[in-house]
Length: 287
Length: 166
Image (cartoon, each protein chain N blue to C red):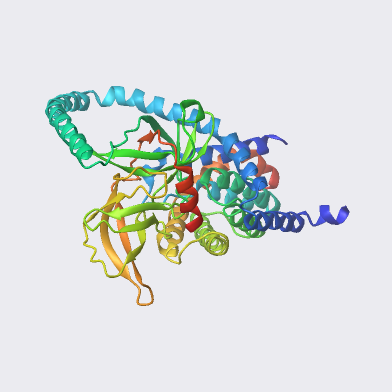
């Protein structure tokens, strides 16, 4: 006993090192997941409280300083609203025509989903792993593997998917994380591929399994393919920056800049679409 | 005697909340933010020795892992190990001034970054490009803000430092 007290520095160092190595080696065990869950649950009330204080102070300050800006914004918003009302009428007409044509071609009607608005309360607590925590959870009907989107200007694009749900908060794995896999396709060529974040954490994404024979143009849009069972097809992801071809591979890597500016993202929408479990199982098994 | 432990617990939680909040992104440069928690661990190790440094590094690292979606132990181990080593070069060996603090934090951040890279390479996935995109910028950023934070922490732990004879 005296030995342990006298050498407590070394004893603690060895014990902590062993714990970390064992924990890293058995990442899939329920023990590690429970331990991590306890830590996450312990901090979540503090995160919500801090966000409340930060948000309240920000709003109070904004009340004093941003009144003139708000007046200008209101004028601009009213003008935009009028413009959108005319677009909405046009859209109804197009939607009706689209449904009629789909029926004629026997394609079936396109499914629409409800969404849950949410605010970001915490983001990337370190520089290595990308993660976003939002103020909606199980109590609001959020479930694991629901897709999350946001608006960048007027464009709706994919943010990521829900990977952890608690009572009133959830965790999003964003598309710029190297841990995510999203089935995507090139909008012009329709070639499918598998998108994930770059492992160097540059805020870009990379698509694998695009054949070298395909000419990919910089600026070409990337959309979800619907394969994988999580994301509905046709959601915007980003645009092609460049391609990288390895002599030894039959495929090329396509580097994609996401539509969403993750550094300034504040609000998101969770699409209430439950994953297609069979498709998801096949997708995860082939990863 | 329990007061310094309460201060430490409060500072750990506060650092995690501040660097995890979306408003902290305002000070990020090229997507990289300083690691306040790590600066705190180095400060505690430098001021109160290896044992305090490694225990704080381990506990705060586990909490950091829990909220970061990282494999449990991947952020904890480098913080614990650097806390252990930084404690060996405490205040009695290296005098506290702006240059020494900046240098300590720069070297400590580089060591932490390289350890994280090796662990991520073995147990997760990463690429060597993170040296340029994360490790170096974070080391510069930590070193830049550390002197100001050390002054702040000196105020918080004023009585404990006096008791230790600093």
